[in-house]
Length: 131
Image (cartoon, rainbow, N blue to C red; front, top):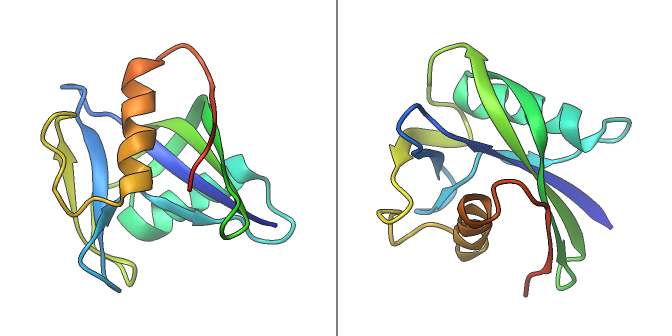
């Protein structure tokens, strides 16, 4: 089973950070695969910096999502920015902050669900199966 880790990062206006992928015309949360020998919370710090240029701190776990079709287990963390400036990378050619009701139509559907969960369960942890 592959492990994944993604970050929910809010700005001061409660907008969420999304990255536009370079491999296809889709927006997604910053994150990716957990590498061997790495914890999911270490992976998200590394992935966010690689993809966005931001250095973040993990605040807490927001959700665990099982994706049996892959098979994959995904951890979603609430992160806060500590340093850095947004920059493009090999994986993301654009970054932007979006209000929860104004997500781009080409946002990955699984990520839309995870974003909605972050807004609707701010103090809980979501445990879900995603098709």
